[in-house]
Image 1: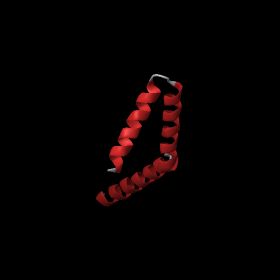
Image 2 (image 1 turned 120 degrees about the vertical axis):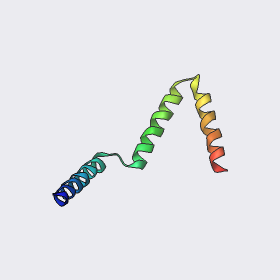
Image 3 (image 1 turned 60 degrees about the vertical axis):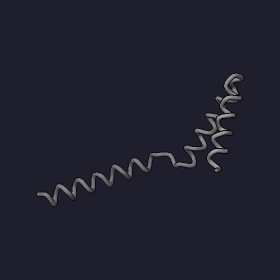
Length: 65
């Protein structure tokens, strides 16, 4: 009984993870989409553009250390 449960549970888990990974976007594509959305949003706002770019610049400098 326990063996049957483990086999069914393991198979179901593998199938669900496979379906999730098949439909999940890849990491580089996801990061590229987020960056494009961020750039579009920050470039359209004259008040937020300098603030966003300053935050990104400072965080990039701190990340390089």
